[in-house]
Length: 86
Image 1 (cartoon, helix red, strand yellow):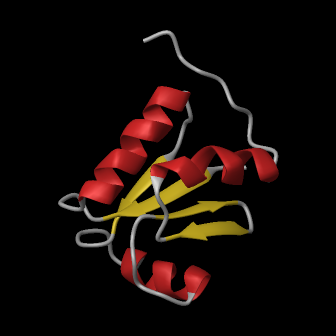
Image 2: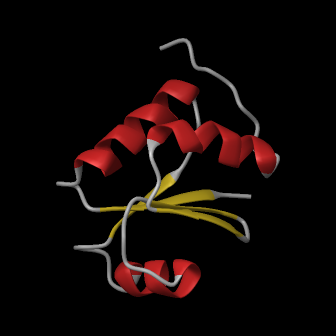
């Protein structure tokens, strides 16, 4: 299962979400809704809204979230949680 996160690079919540995922050692694929064709439409289709950050792990979606919601979401959906030694 791949983890996708939809962001706007200028969004402070998105930057914080990416920093949290990095600190947790999670591998993810970033989609910029400003520059990636179809990314904004994907956010709307998977979450029924247009706010970012929006994260998708398989069929599970977490939309318009704060960093404190990331770990519970991933754990709930069986995502391996490993901290990196960086």
